[in-house]
Image 1 (cartoon, rainbow, N blue to C red):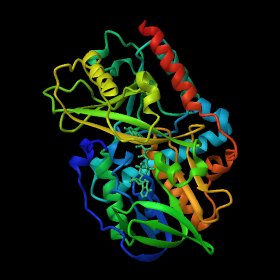
Image 2 (image 1 turned 180 degrees about the horizontal axis):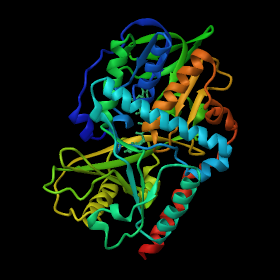
Image 3 (image 1 turned 90 degrees about the horizontal axis):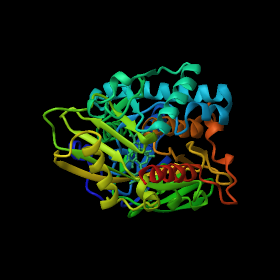
Image 4 (image 1 turned 90 degrees about the vertical axis):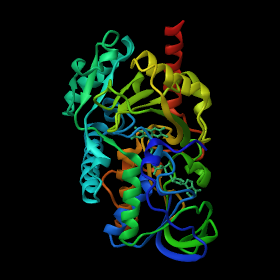
Length: 421
Ligand SMILES: Cc1cc2nc3c(=O)[nH]c(=O)nc-3n(C[C@H](O)[C@H](O)[C@H](O)COP(=O)(O)OP(=O)(O)OC[C@H]3O[C@@H](n4cnc5c(N)ncnc54)[C@H](O)[C@@H]3O)c2cc1C
């Protein structure tokens, strides 16, 4: 496992005991990341009893190790989402993510950590001609759909200005202190009546009458419903989803606090394969860099590698002019991608009472909050307006599925390698 992230070090949070006996719960949520904590929070709002079990700690995995971009929308560009769900379906799903982010901002303030979810806007900078055309296409589709955005060459970070001339700004988006946000939410859920066990890895799920037994650590949870909220590790517990959701490793670094920050906004380029942001204490955090090492990063091993970290160092030096900056933190995390780049949420076919929420395809900070809530609503009321679009039943689980991201990423990697020759 890799070292703690900057965010985890800055917010160790409260610890919770391990499960060492048998207990009963209405619902057992496996995983205390943003999905599990948000699901538990929503279940409590419904007045339903919930036990959360995590093999490590709250926000130990991706939810405490990510870049901290809180973007509205999904892993698909809006025009692609329209192609998939139709105009109304795409508009509704996007609006649901916007409401989720608004709710996160309000909830963080209510829980006393307003700095943990802040609306800053987000910037996308084109590093080459191909990406320039991509930004122009996305800007015009977004404008047609009424999504707030604008061309923003004026916001391009100063060290990139001689080589980059096109950018887009999305004012609705936000930035997180990921571990502060999720650990505060998980602890608040515990204060409101959820029971949280840490250090309690789930080894298996067993049918028991109408419900389930969750074998976790040194005990068992008997529950009417179970939500598997493990994102990149979902296939380990639900092998029937292997390939529908699959793990991808992401890597990040953070510099020491700097005298002068070259960045004002959370920013990305290389179509999201490189992302970089400032922190309040004057650091730059850079993540991504996996394009040149693509095949090695289809793994659930949470370790940093020299190859990807060297790409991040090179970006810091060559594009942000920070070659001399000392790097104080390097970490890795595992994210769950879905085969069609949309989350997979809801009951599993032929397994009454067993639910999944994950596969956010690299953009789970807002989708995780939304989808944890969708799973909770489905358990309690049986419905949610976005459930049909995200249901696991859209995949044929009996035959291998095409993984859209892998095809696209390989094309992108090939283009990059041609341009570097
Ligand atoms: C490096 C990196 C950068 C990213 N950057 C961004 C970003 O900037 N913006 C964005 O929106 N998204 C980003 N993401 C994606 C985002 O972090 C995830 O999609 C999101 O955090 C998933 O949340 P989750 O709660 O579903 O899963 P996780 O945060 O992975 O939590 C799952 C939990 O389940 C537990 N668990 C797993 N298996 C078991 C088991 N068998 N028994 C018990 N517990 C188990 C784990 O310990 C963990 O705590 C990034 C991800 C990574 C790795």
